[in-house]
Length: 590
Image (cartoon, rainbow, N blue to C red; front, side, top):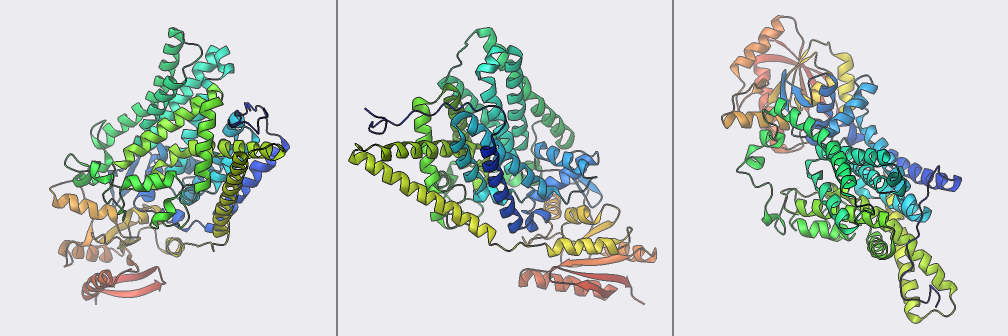
């Protein structure tokens, strides 16, 4: 019976490509990378240079800059230092980039794009080694056209870098279990050590990535290693454990320094009512109940539809089609998993179990979490892109053989039609995403351009009163200037100060730590701050008022009231104004 006539799926090709890329492969992956980078350039880096979304991107950038300045992965603004909410794994990567760019943080958004480009190339190489050229091309293309992947490749966020580190860990797992490493014990132990290092480092980038150990355990159980000598297994386990422990131990040490305990959390420090002992960060109610931000469906529905490529049906995640990958890719991924588990090599099956175990544990954990975001599961989704590439290549190879077989059955004709439909759906989905990205006009940041202009024109010893985040001003206008918060409000607008608001909330709850000064600690201007500003003006130090344009009438009314009170005590002269900010100079009333 011919293979096309058989009802069984064809065996997965044992690719095991090695060595340098061929010219054809180099052209394929180069074209995919070029398309990705053109789409990124068309989208623009406005949100990236603004360090959005706040406060996440702002904290990552600030932690990296402070690492480069020797303070550690902390926040520093208003003259004081505070712990960051986040662990220090991603800021370590950013710090290296800052140092290589003479301490400049403005290029950090481009680092995410660089890491995303390398991730596409890494997925291509890994899929090529296991499943062949066609699977590699499809896997890399689906990843490059993933909306969540593109979006976060433009931001100073940890999601795409964590995906890259996870791909590195998966690659080391493949190497550690390969025939080559099995023949050379030192190479095998080195591969296991590197696997542990990458897995541990991904954990200090995102602590929930400790679920990667679930994937490791599952793949070892489901696809046992060929050589099962106890001493060999113990050495491999010790090497992986040592690698994993190194970055985790460093992070625990940083926690002890900045938070007072190795196991303390920056989230609990900043938002104790949510992440502290009495908070409900994880709850069974979030499985099908509403979560933040603005998710009325519950986590199970969101993540399930995302994994099936049907999340666009919910209509509330910012993309009407899909957010992670399209429905056709999800079907091909299922085909890939089934085929690999049936007839794939031991290395391929081991990687599939590793990825599924990790992705399943990660998704299950986030199903109980207060917040919902498809980007949370992006690091574990690498296995979906690999399986989609393998499944699509396998299905099309089977379709080609079935078409050539003149004795094909009606069942095979139906299968051929199904593959054609899926191919068309996949092509349409990916093309639609590419066209949407390529046709989007690039946006620049008027706020950042304004701050750069102000930085060039103001003296270095100026005192600046502002409703813009003091941490943001500290990064863009430099530490040599003094900053005073206009108020401690955070109405949730784009550039208002989350951190200053949280510090004053902590003070109201009994915290007695140091606080940056604000002009209005309530409805009325602080008498002490008014005297301080008057003294600053008497010392011939420039004092300026920098106001970000309000986005709501209610906040505009608050700013007008505060402006009027300042004007009653000081002479205020306009310096410059645009749609983003207004700059005024304060002087003593005669």
